[in-house]
Length: 102
Image (cartoon, rainbow, N blue to C red):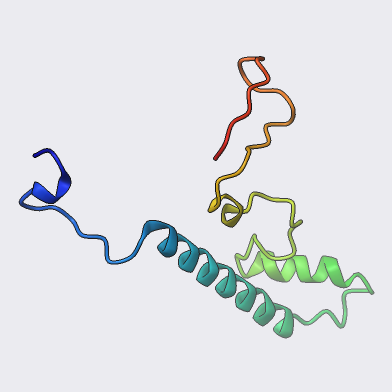
């Protein structure tokens, strides 16, 4: 028998990988949102001459939070928990216009 269950030191998954990934990504997003909100609440932009976004960006940078205030068009791993067609910008490496799914 070549199944992993036959191994003497085989690991046992307590939850499905997909369930773990969903919970992990959700917890990570919540933590990041809380961190951004905390910096925003404590950022003193009173003397920043009206450019509140530039002030907030500086506070985020000073706090080491490079993910705050970013464009939402960045890669989102949660989108790939479901099987769907990958968007490679209309062309793929081999030029055969094949559809790929992730």
